[in-house]
Structure formats: structure tokens, C-alpha cells
Image 1: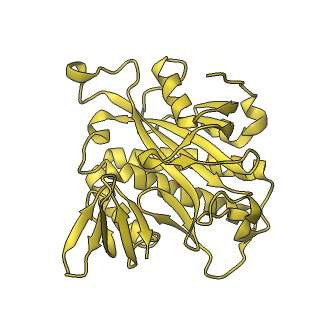
Image 2: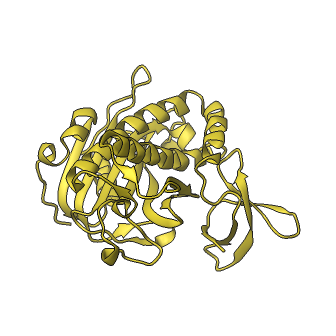
Length: 301
């Protein structure tokens, strides 16, 4: 894989000021893949978290040639119009592998992204074109606006070289979670990759240039991941309940008739009621039965 490094400070000055490590490249296959590779070979390291302060590394690319989404989906992006950035954070292995709480890591990534986008819009005095234009999360990993996909998130666990694997693994070891975030920030309507996608500039007026937007959002995401994940590590169960309440206001699927498409080809139709304690989706079918959905693509009917 050929990688041309660029000066990160000229691309992401605000992000560089708050992140522990920034890698910016012209082109790569996937920022998540690049981050995992660099963590694996030791060229990207994250210091131990001290006094509740988490280290956050950033891997950004102007262009991805093989962007990835959940369940083998592809993420299509365009240079200078779409932000493709991965954020790497060390967290305890015990939390990352605990199925009773680790589903909330993806939800945290979504909430961090909404906070960052909304914060950037407010900072620059931009305004939605319509009063009902607000950002939501389509469970489990999409940013939505007016029922259309504005961004996608992909969370992956990476074992750093210093941690054991298999029988050598220690529950007290740290692992790294890489959060890949792709956002359509400055795509015109004619450039949208699918009829189900959208771009921030189509819904909000008064936005700054793409470069300023990308940097301002990434800066906020670094700070958001650091703050939210530190709280989650300190009290996973308590934070899970708080996050469950917070998701009620921004969960796009909640209260809608949806169809869940599973990887085995089966589907399930019903009303999305909300989230369980482990961040899985509750889907109520017509007969009144509640089903738990943990891995599926969910679309509205």
C-alpha cells in the first residue's frame, strides 16, 4: 500500500492542537485499515490513560480507494467534499469485550459525531434551511438528516503489540478501538452517490469552507471521544443508562415502522420501540412480540 504523507498541521491545525497523534495522507484504501496497520506495526502508539485522560490518535485521508462500512458495505467519498477520518482510543479490554455494554461504544461514536457537527454549525453561525432540519442517528451506525444518510461510522477493535492474544490475553490489558467516521460535508446534489444519501451543505446555509468544516468537526470529535469514553470507562453500567435516555431524542428509527435485514438473508418487520440495556434495538412485530436486533441493516417502510 503506497501512502503519501502530508503535513498534518496545514490540513488539520485545530485537530493537531488537541489530538495526541495525527497522521494525514493524500490517499489510502481505508483510514480504519491504515490506523489498524500502524497500531499493529508500532508506528502509531497511544500512551496509557492517566487520571482519566484518554489519548486519542487521528488518521485522516483526502481520498479513500476502498472505504468500508458495516457488513461488507462500501463507503464512497469524494476528495475535498467528504471527510474520511478515523479516531483511535485505548480502552480496557474488559469493557471492549463485555457484550453487556460494548454495544454502547458505537452509540458513543454517533453521539460524538452529532455533537461535533452541531457544534461546528453553531460556531460559524450557520443555520438550517428548514425548521425541522436536525441531525439524527439511524441505529446502529449512520448519521441521518431528513431521512437520508449524511454519514457512516465503523468501529473496530485492534490489539496493540504490547497486549497478549489468546491464552496470553490479560483482562486488565488495554485494546484500541478505531472509530472510522465518513461525512458528506460539501457534496452538491448532483454528486451524491445514491438517492438515499445527502450532504450537510444541502441542509445548512452559511457553512465555512470544506477544510474549515473538516478541521472544526474533527477537533470536536477528538475532545468528544476523550470525554465521553473516559466517563464510560469509569462507570459503564451507569453511563449505559444515561446514553439510553440520550438516544431517545436522536434515534431516527424509534417509533417508525422498519424492516431489519439480516446477514443470512432473512428480514423482520415491525415498529422500532427503542434500545435495550446493551444498546441492541427493540423491534415489535404486528403480533405484539418484542424482538432483539443486534446486527442488521434497518430501513424505514
